[in-house]
Length: 212
Image (cartoon, rainbow, N blue to C red; front, side, top):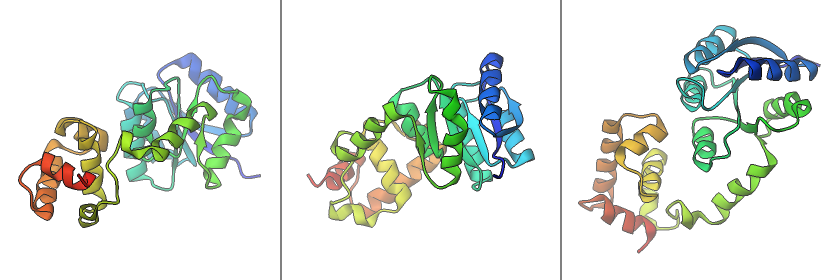
């Protein structure tokens, strides 16, 4: 069996030691470990592992590190290992390119197998979070606009994503942070959407996209 090579990053040394032991016991190889987002990105670029295993709340932000690794090394699977069950963290991580979201209180003996599942093309999600993902798609009206409105077909995927987030009540700055873009870029997307939909303000655009 081919060894799964892992770069891991967590700012707690004791947790790193525990995770390293779990990975090695499961047959994975930890090729490097760091304590910050910057180190996670640099080590991933240096070692080109199979998996980058990241804590969310380490200095510099694990989600930002996930996005940078995903952009620079799309062949590297990014998996979050965290204590956070916060819904925003979960969906921000998936939007940033993470292929898995595992909780630190899970059975350590399953960790390496979870990473192998990701590399085999499956997602890795802690069972207690599966219901939240399913709810997101079963009841889209809670969080996002409906794709059924005729106006939606005029937008690019990125424009649609921006308008979804605005429809949740986020500010321009919040949307920029979620998508790892500048506020100026978000404003350009909004301006383009208004032109495509032939409206003068974002509220009118949102009403069209909701099919009101």
